[in-house]
Image 1: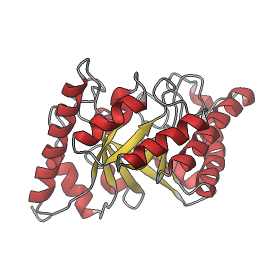
Image 2: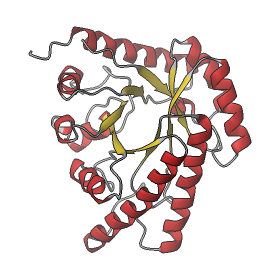
Image 3: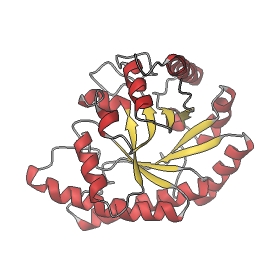
Image 4: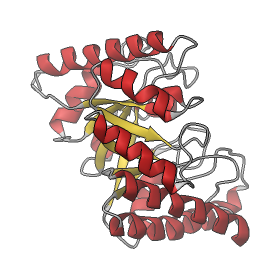
Length: 279
């Protein structure tokens, strides 16, 4: 039996202020959260707002496990343009500051731009650019009491394959960087059957989301086609000890969103309590 802590990303309410969703999340039985950095939700540039969020999180007895760094087309740490790359670096450094003030364990980063289609001859140089920036951000995280984790991305994007993440880990000037496994992304890339073993030793946390194999649906675990029994059995075998953060799509009805998250948590816990690694 494995009893991994299961938390919820506040990103399911990214279009509303974080102060509107923290209490409903707590009242739904979640004690562990990942904080979303979407500016309309929590402006990571505004440290006064970040401090206020930390106070409210503490008042409610929640644990801020991780902060998801910002991601957008203009935040491209692989860019061949040093000014664009510098802008991306600055945004991630500000996120590292916010992570320190929130007191999270991890800063989760998409290690590449939110678009693909780059010329193949640029690939290696872009990988080197990413490694250079990530080394700096990792150092900043450590100075602020957090650690950097890289998330596997969608298969058509930079770092959408396990081999890309392994290359980046090897290119960094530090060993103090881990991986956040996004199950939905790995399912779409076809990596989910082997990802746990390939990244064994580097997996520090998980984003749990389900889909039907066609798009990044962000369904609660159990509502899509992922074989969760097989995946969680692999996680036991490699000795995974991190937290599982649910990343579910928000609905027009906030209560329906939270009901889906609770259903996904029950689903994962029911499996983990029945796991027989030898089966």
